[in-house]
Amino acid sequence: MTTDLPLVTALINTYNYARYLPFAINSVLAQTYPNIEIVVVDDGSTDHTSSVLAQYGERVRAIRTVNGGQGHAFNLGFTAARGELIMMLDADDMWLPEKVERMVEFASENPEAALMYHRHQNVDEKGNEIGTPQPLPLINGDYRNRFLRSGGTWWSPVTSVIALRADHVRKMLPLPTYAVREGADTVVTDCCVLTSKLASIPDALTLRLLHGSNLYAAGRDDMTYRTKAIREADVRRIEWRVFSLAQIMARFGQKLELDLERNGWRMINLYWLGRASFLKMARACLLSPEHSISWRWSRLKWVMATKKLYAGER
Image 1 (cartoon, rainbow, N blue to C red):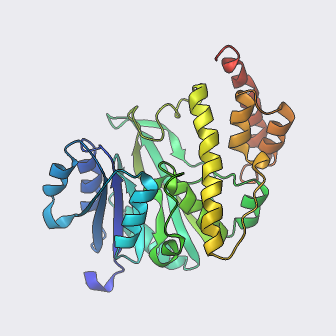
Image 2 (image 1 turned 120 degrees about the horizontal axis):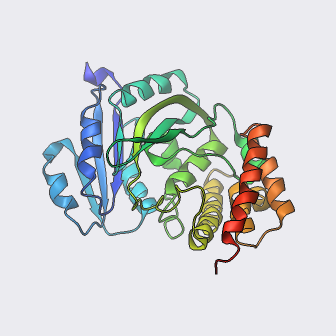
Protein backbone atom coordinates (compact mmCIF):
# COMPACT_ATOMS: atom_id res chain seq x y z
CA MET A 1 0.00 0.00 0.00
CA THR A 2 1.10 3.55 -0.67
CA THR A 3 0.84 4.51 3.00
CA ASP A 4 3.40 1.81 3.90
CA LEU A 5 6.02 3.54 1.77
CA PRO A 6 8.03 6.61 2.84
CA LEU A 7 6.57 9.85 1.55
CA VAL A 8 8.87 11.61 -0.92
CA THR A 9 8.66 15.33 -1.60
CA ALA A 10 9.52 16.27 -5.17
CA LEU A 11 10.64 19.88 -4.71
CA ILE A 12 10.74 22.06 -7.80
CA ASN A 13 11.84 25.68 -7.71
CA THR A 14 11.07 27.79 -10.76
CA TYR A 15 11.46 31.31 -12.07
CA ASN A 16 10.00 32.23 -15.47
CA TYR A 17 10.34 28.68 -16.77
CA ALA A 18 6.66 28.10 -17.62
CA ARG A 19 7.64 26.72 -21.05
CA TYR A 20 9.66 23.92 -19.44
CA LEU A 21 7.77 23.35 -16.18
CA PRO A 22 5.18 20.85 -17.52
CA PHE A 23 7.94 18.48 -18.62
CA ALA A 24 9.45 18.52 -15.11
CA ILE A 25 6.10 18.02 -13.36
CA ASN A 26 4.97 15.32 -15.78
CA SER A 27 8.21 13.42 -15.21
CA VAL A 28 7.35 13.28 -11.50
CA LEU A 29 3.77 12.20 -12.19
CA ALA A 30 5.15 9.39 -14.39
CA GLN A 31 7.27 7.88 -11.60
CA THR A 32 6.95 4.18 -10.78
CA TYR A 33 7.02 5.07 -7.07
CA PRO A 34 3.49 5.89 -5.83
CA ASN A 35 3.91 7.92 -2.63
CA ILE A 36 5.08 11.35 -3.84
CA GLU A 37 3.95 14.88 -3.13
CA ILE A 38 4.91 17.61 -5.58
CA VAL A 39 5.80 21.03 -4.18
CA VAL A 40 6.57 23.83 -6.62
CA VAL A 41 8.01 27.10 -5.33
CA ASP A 42 7.31 29.85 -7.86
CA ASP A 43 10.00 32.42 -7.12
CA GLY A 44 8.10 35.48 -8.34
CA SER A 45 7.69 34.47 -11.99
CA THR A 46 6.30 37.10 -14.37
CA ASP A 47 5.43 34.68 -17.20
CA HIS A 48 2.46 32.26 -17.30
CA THR A 49 3.81 29.93 -14.59
CA SER A 50 0.71 30.42 -12.41
CA SER A 51 -1.64 29.27 -15.19
CA VAL A 52 0.55 26.22 -15.83
CA LEU A 53 0.40 25.26 -12.17
CA ALA A 54 -3.35 25.80 -12.02
CA GLN A 55 -3.85 23.11 -14.66
CA TYR A 56 -2.51 20.47 -12.25
CA GLY A 57 -5.00 21.25 -9.50
CA GLU A 58 -4.45 19.29 -6.29
CA ARG A 59 -1.73 17.12 -7.83
CA VAL A 60 0.72 19.98 -7.22
CA ARG A 61 1.10 22.13 -4.11
CA ALA A 62 2.20 25.54 -5.36
CA ILE A 63 3.90 28.17 -3.22
CA ARG A 64 4.00 31.65 -4.71
CA THR A 65 6.58 34.10 -3.35
CA VAL A 66 8.40 37.29 -4.28
CA ASN A 67 11.58 36.80 -6.28
CA GLY A 68 14.34 36.06 -3.78
CA GLY A 69 16.61 33.59 -5.53
CA GLN A 70 17.26 29.89 -5.14
CA GLY A 71 18.21 30.04 -1.46
CA HIS A 72 14.95 31.83 -0.63
CA ALA A 73 12.95 29.27 -2.63
CA PHE A 74 14.69 26.41 -0.84
CA ASN A 75 13.93 27.90 2.57
CA LEU A 76 10.23 27.89 1.73
CA GLY A 77 10.27 24.50 0.03
CA PHE A 78 12.26 22.66 2.70
CA THR A 79 9.95 24.05 5.38
CA ALA A 80 6.80 23.06 3.49
CA ALA A 81 7.97 19.56 2.54
CA ARG A 82 6.14 16.73 4.32
CA GLY A 83 8.24 13.87 2.97
CA GLU A 84 10.90 11.90 4.81
CA LEU A 85 13.05 12.36 1.72
CA ILE A 86 13.26 15.54 -0.35
CA MET A 87 14.26 15.06 -3.97
CA MET A 88 15.14 18.21 -5.89
CA LEU A 89 14.25 18.99 -9.49
CA ASP A 90 15.00 22.10 -11.54
CA ALA A 91 12.03 23.29 -13.58
CA ASP A 92 13.84 22.68 -16.87
CA ASP A 93 15.02 19.13 -16.11
CA MET A 94 13.29 15.73 -16.11
CA TRP A 95 13.47 12.52 -14.09
CA LEU A 96 13.52 9.07 -15.63
CA PRO A 97 10.48 7.04 -14.47
CA GLU A 98 12.31 4.75 -12.04
CA LYS A 99 14.39 7.49 -10.38
CA VAL A 100 12.36 7.91 -7.16
CA GLU A 101 11.86 4.18 -6.65
CA ARG A 102 15.57 3.58 -7.06
CA MET A 103 16.56 6.39 -4.70
CA VAL A 104 14.10 5.39 -1.96
CA GLU A 105 15.55 1.88 -1.96
CA PHE A 106 19.08 3.29 -2.04
CA ALA A 107 18.33 5.59 0.91
CA SER A 108 17.12 2.64 2.98
CA GLU A 109 20.40 0.85 2.24
CA ASN A 110 22.47 3.89 3.34
CA PRO A 111 20.88 5.16 6.58
CA GLU A 112 23.97 7.17 7.60
CA ALA A 113 23.92 9.30 4.43
CA ALA A 114 22.01 12.59 4.56
CA LEU A 115 22.77 13.19 0.88
CA MET A 116 22.21 10.62 -1.84
CA TYR A 117 22.71 11.34 -5.51
CA HIS A 118 23.25 9.87 -8.96
CA ARG A 119 24.60 11.00 -12.31
CA HIS A 120 22.72 13.12 -14.87
CA GLN A 121 22.76 13.15 -18.65
CA ASN A 122 22.90 16.50 -20.43
CA VAL A 123 20.52 16.78 -23.39
CA ASP A 124 19.60 19.47 -25.90
CA GLU A 125 16.07 20.67 -26.65
CA LYS A 126 15.60 17.86 -29.17
CA GLY A 127 16.53 15.25 -26.60
CA ASN A 128 19.95 14.52 -28.07
CA GLU A 129 22.53 13.47 -25.49
CA ILE A 130 25.44 15.85 -24.95
CA GLY A 131 28.63 14.26 -23.65
CA THR A 132 28.83 11.50 -21.08
CA PRO A 133 26.89 11.30 -17.79
CA GLN A 134 28.18 13.56 -15.01
CA PRO A 135 29.69 13.97 -12.51
CA LEU A 136 32.58 11.74 -13.52
CA PRO A 137 33.91 11.08 -9.99
CA LEU A 138 31.37 9.89 -7.41
CA ILE A 139 31.76 10.29 -3.66
CA ASN A 140 30.68 7.68 -1.13
CA GLY A 141 31.15 7.62 2.62
CA ASP A 142 33.00 10.24 4.67
CA TYR A 143 34.56 12.96 2.50
CA ARG A 144 34.87 15.68 5.15
CA ASN A 145 38.65 15.69 5.63
CA ARG A 146 39.42 15.61 1.91
CA PHE A 147 36.90 18.41 1.34
CA LEU A 148 38.66 20.57 3.92
CA ARG A 149 42.15 19.76 2.61
CA SER A 150 41.13 20.76 -0.92
CA GLY A 151 39.67 24.13 0.03
CA GLY A 152 36.12 22.95 -0.58
CA THR A 153 36.80 21.42 -3.99
CA TRP A 154 34.65 18.58 -5.28
CA TRP A 155 32.44 17.86 -8.28
CA SER A 156 29.19 18.49 -6.44
CA PRO A 157 25.96 17.08 -7.90
CA VAL A 158 23.48 19.37 -9.66
CA THR A 159 20.10 20.16 -8.11
CA SER A 160 18.05 17.62 -10.07
CA VAL A 161 19.93 14.54 -8.83
CA ILE A 162 19.91 15.33 -5.11
CA ALA A 163 17.98 13.34 -2.51
CA LEU A 164 18.07 14.68 1.06
CA ARG A 165 16.87 13.48 4.42
CA ALA A 166 14.38 16.14 5.45
CA ASP A 167 15.24 16.09 9.17
CA HIS A 168 18.91 16.75 8.38
CA VAL A 169 18.45 19.51 5.83
CA ARG A 170 16.12 21.47 8.10
CA LYS A 171 19.00 21.89 10.55
CA MET A 172 20.64 24.11 7.93
CA LEU A 173 17.75 26.58 7.72
CA PRO A 174 17.49 29.38 7.01
CA LEU A 175 19.94 29.34 4.12
CA PRO A 176 21.56 32.77 3.65
CA THR A 177 19.80 34.38 0.69
CA TYR A 178 21.82 37.50 -0.08
CA ALA A 179 24.81 35.50 -1.28
CA VAL A 180 23.11 32.46 -2.80
CA ARG A 181 20.57 33.70 -5.36
CA GLU A 182 22.19 30.99 -7.47
CA GLY A 183 24.07 27.92 -6.27
CA ALA A 184 22.17 27.33 -3.03
CA ASP A 185 22.12 23.64 -3.94
CA THR A 186 25.91 23.59 -3.62
CA VAL A 187 25.73 25.18 -0.17
CA VAL A 188 23.36 22.40 0.89
CA THR A 189 25.49 19.60 -0.56
CA ASP A 190 28.68 21.08 0.94
CA CYS A 191 27.01 21.16 4.34
CA CYS A 192 26.07 17.49 3.94
CA VAL A 193 29.72 16.68 3.14
CA LEU A 194 30.76 18.31 6.42
CA THR A 195 28.02 16.84 8.61
CA SER A 196 27.21 13.36 7.28
CA LYS A 197 28.19 10.59 4.94
CA LEU A 198 27.35 10.59 1.21
CA ALA A 199 26.08 7.82 -1.05
CA SER A 200 25.92 7.81 -4.85
CA ILE A 201 24.60 5.72 -7.73
CA PRO A 202 26.57 5.63 -11.01
CA ASP A 203 23.47 5.52 -13.24
CA ALA A 204 22.07 8.66 -14.92
CA LEU A 205 18.48 8.98 -13.67
CA THR A 206 17.94 12.64 -14.63
CA LEU A 207 17.96 14.43 -17.97
CA ARG A 208 19.43 17.91 -17.59
CA LEU A 209 18.31 20.22 -20.36
CA LEU A 210 20.85 22.65 -21.81
CA HIS A 211 18.98 25.33 -23.72
CA GLY A 212 21.25 28.37 -23.73
CA SER A 213 19.38 30.33 -21.08
CA ASN A 214 19.89 28.15 -18.01
CA LEU A 215 19.99 30.55 -15.07
CA TYR A 216 23.27 29.16 -13.80
CA ALA A 217 24.80 27.21 -16.66
CA ALA A 218 24.39 29.73 -19.48
CA GLY A 219 27.79 30.11 -21.10
CA ARG A 220 29.41 27.57 -18.78
CA ASP A 221 29.02 24.36 -20.74
CA ASP A 222 31.45 25.42 -23.44
CA MET A 223 34.54 24.23 -21.60
CA THR A 224 36.89 25.74 -24.19
CA TYR A 225 36.03 29.37 -23.61
CA ARG A 226 33.95 31.38 -21.16
CA THR A 227 33.98 35.16 -20.91
CA LYS A 228 35.98 36.89 -18.24
CA ALA A 229 32.71 38.14 -16.74
CA ILE A 230 31.60 34.54 -16.23
CA ARG A 231 34.99 33.66 -14.76
CA GLU A 232 34.70 36.54 -12.30
CA ALA A 233 31.18 35.39 -11.39
CA ASP A 234 32.47 31.87 -10.76
CA VAL A 235 35.13 33.19 -8.39
CA ARG A 236 32.58 35.28 -6.47
CA ARG A 237 30.18 32.35 -6.29
CA ILE A 238 32.80 30.15 -4.68
CA GLU A 239 33.70 32.84 -2.16
CA TRP A 240 30.04 33.57 -1.39
CA ARG A 241 29.37 29.84 -1.01
CA VAL A 242 32.11 29.44 1.57
CA PHE A 243 30.95 32.57 3.43
CA SER A 244 27.40 31.20 3.57
CA LEU A 245 28.59 27.73 4.51
CA ALA A 246 30.53 29.11 7.47
CA GLN A 247 27.33 30.65 8.85
CA ILE A 248 25.41 27.39 8.52
CA MET A 249 28.18 25.30 10.07
CA ALA A 250 28.14 27.60 13.10
CA ARG A 251 24.62 26.27 13.78
CA PHE A 252 26.14 22.79 13.94
CA GLY A 253 28.64 24.10 16.50
CA GLN A 254 31.53 23.89 14.04
CA LYS A 255 33.95 26.54 12.84
CA LEU A 256 34.68 26.31 9.13
CA GLU A 257 38.26 26.98 8.08
CA LEU A 258 39.01 26.59 4.38
CA ASP A 259 42.12 27.65 2.51
CA LEU A 260 40.64 29.01 -0.72
CA GLU A 261 44.06 28.95 -2.38
CA ARG A 262 43.60 25.17 -2.40
CA ASN A 263 40.24 25.41 -4.17
CA GLY A 264 40.97 24.14 -7.66
CA TRP A 265 38.18 25.82 -9.61
CA ARG A 266 38.71 29.18 -7.91
CA MET A 267 42.44 29.13 -8.60
CA ILE A 268 41.97 28.04 -12.23
CA ASN A 269 39.65 30.99 -12.85
CA LEU A 270 42.00 33.40 -11.10
CA TYR A 271 44.88 32.09 -13.20
CA TRP A 272 42.96 32.69 -16.42
CA LEU A 273 42.06 36.16 -15.16
CA GLY A 274 45.73 36.93 -14.49
CA ARG A 275 45.17 37.18 -10.74
CA ALA A 276 46.93 34.00 -9.60
CA SER A 277 50.36 32.63 -10.39
CA PHE A 278 50.94 29.43 -12.31
CA LEU A 279 52.48 27.78 -9.26
CA LYS A 280 49.48 28.49 -7.01
CA MET A 281 47.07 27.26 -9.66
CA ALA A 282 49.11 24.12 -10.36
CA ARG A 283 49.31 23.31 -6.66
CA ALA A 284 45.54 23.50 -6.30
CA CYS A 285 44.97 21.35 -9.40
CA LEU A 286 47.47 18.66 -8.47
CA LEU A 287 46.24 18.37 -4.87
CA SER A 288 42.60 17.72 -5.83
CA PRO A 289 41.75 14.52 -3.91
CA GLU A 290 38.77 13.21 -5.90
CA HIS A 291 40.60 12.67 -9.20
CA SER A 292 43.37 10.33 -10.27
CA ILE A 293 46.88 11.68 -10.77
CA SER A 294 46.61 11.24 -14.54
CA TRP A 295 43.30 13.14 -14.63
CA ARG A 296 44.80 15.99 -12.56
CA TRP A 297 47.77 16.22 -14.92
CA SER A 298 45.48 16.25 -17.98
CA ARG A 299 43.39 19.03 -16.47
CA LEU A 300 46.50 21.06 -15.69
CA LYS A 301 47.61 20.83 -19.33
CA TRP A 302 44.13 21.89 -20.48
CA VAL A 303 44.19 24.89 -18.12
CA MET A 304 47.55 26.04 -19.48
CA ALA A 305 46.43 25.60 -23.10
CA THR A 306 43.20 27.54 -22.48
CA LYS A 307 44.86 30.55 -20.86
CA LYS A 308 45.99 31.94 -24.22
CA LEU A 309 42.32 32.53 -25.14
CA TYR A 310 42.16 35.25 -22.48
CA ALA A 311 45.35 37.07 -23.43
CA GLY A 312 43.69 39.85 -25.45
CA GLU A 313 40.40 40.15 -23.61
CA ARG A 314 39.71 43.19 -21.48
